Picture 1 (cartoon, helix red, strand yellow):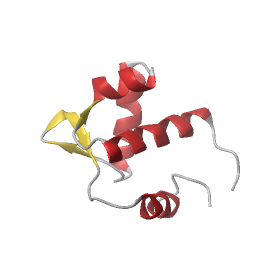
Picture 2 (cartoon, helix red, strand yellow):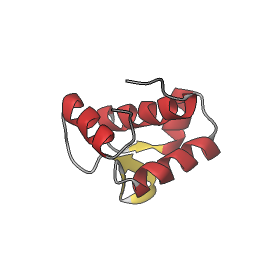
Picture 3 (cartoon, rainbow, N blue to C red):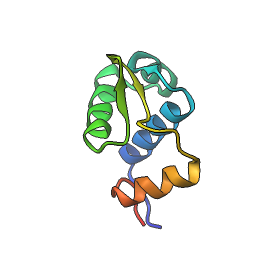
Picture 4 (cartoon, rainbow, N blue to C red):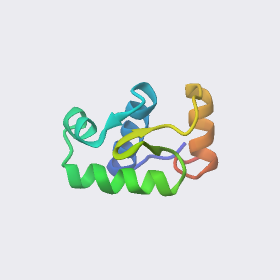
Length: 85
């Protein structure tokens, strides 16, 4: 597997936190990852467009579209070209 950029690492960290904390807020993601709210918002919008996460009830809360294991999570991320093969 090739090296991934810092932005891709940050997006993966967002995905992981969302997987572990369904319904987490963008503000909480920003605080926990020490990223600006604008950066989190941009990454979240991109991940939503890729169908890797979805908004939960309001635009402030995010969850995975389905409950999946970490192995499946990585497989889906690779299939959707989020992670290099």
